[in-house]
Image (cartoon, rainbow, N blue to C red):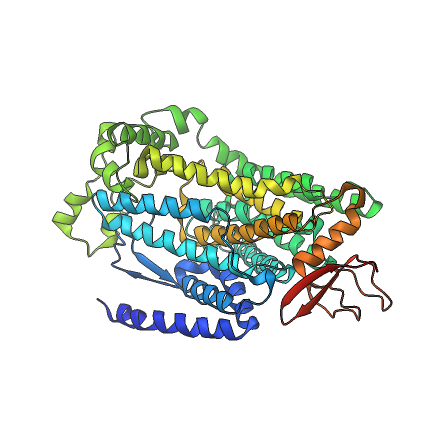
Length: 531
């Protein structure tokens, strides 16, 4: 063990305990932790330590990875659990957690019964970390205050990546930008996942400042994705952004709205026109026939055929994160691809020179998330993973049925299209499993699970939308779910003299909302009045 690993083993528990104590003591510390988790998730692989690292292996994980995000998440979970105050802070079972744990258990059994085991342990540790991040987001995000913080942190991360992409393209002169990630397709998938919530808030946000902030961040994200020239990412982002706009934007047109939307459309057309020669060149680099149907080309179609071969031989798969090992050794040569055998390289050269492995012809992870899952975890694993995705889709799709005036709908719909975005590009990529993308995705899923719990509680409490009184009832739901008036970016303002925590600005005289709430030490109690 290296000295750095020994130091990390001492620091990780110390920082976790210190973070938990600080998060329990202060709400502001929890805010800082969550903001750092969301905004710095894209840098997760630059703030980590890998135990038992096998950097030479071409898999989706190459060591037992512990990142700063997991330390913050552990402190945040403990802090939120110990500082539970009020009905809205009580513990709940997050939606989809059961399916996640079932999938985790199945993956663990796969590791136990497969060979080699060490690569599966690497991926299993990452899965555990992602669930911890999911629980932290679900425990923390409960009110509009935390939702605003989520949007601001996400906007900062997306805006930075967009600006960095512009710098790489125009100053560094890269043909395809990768931002701070390791490949252009990784950056593309990151934007497909993070831009839709920003677009939703931009068209139906809680304040003018927040809407403009999200608009700028989403625009930078769209520019950054376009500069990746990802053949899958560009149409996927176009579809999810258009879907978000159609379902979230108000269609009560005014002169101002028409002007703003016309400018946005013109900017989009101008940007596409300016980069069209490069986009056309990318799509002409390989035809659909060559990419998927030519058996002599190492394209994306080869991964589908390899997955089919593996499933025919191994109903339960070859083991988590073992795709590259078994394809390089057994299945690639069957299709005429002379991959180098890992065992041969290790026996001749050892593992001390990762550059040797990097320059060797080794099988990459399948560029299709379903094919990768089928090959590694077999038919049962693919079924479980598919059910988990269906659960995520259902969580987000439930908000599409709510009236447009419903305050919970904005973020629910935005996160639904976020799931659609990462799913769409995962049909041609495996980078869903990369730590920055996986952790960001699970942060958003945790927030969606919290919003799902709020929707269920409001429905059980008799605060469901009434079509005949949608305006006043939507205010009631805002008060019940969020508990305070927001100012500027949506952070809590003063509560009016009557105790109302409504979202509208108090005019100093009576209150226009029908439901009053008193915010006492962070708790929220709600009762109907006639004011």
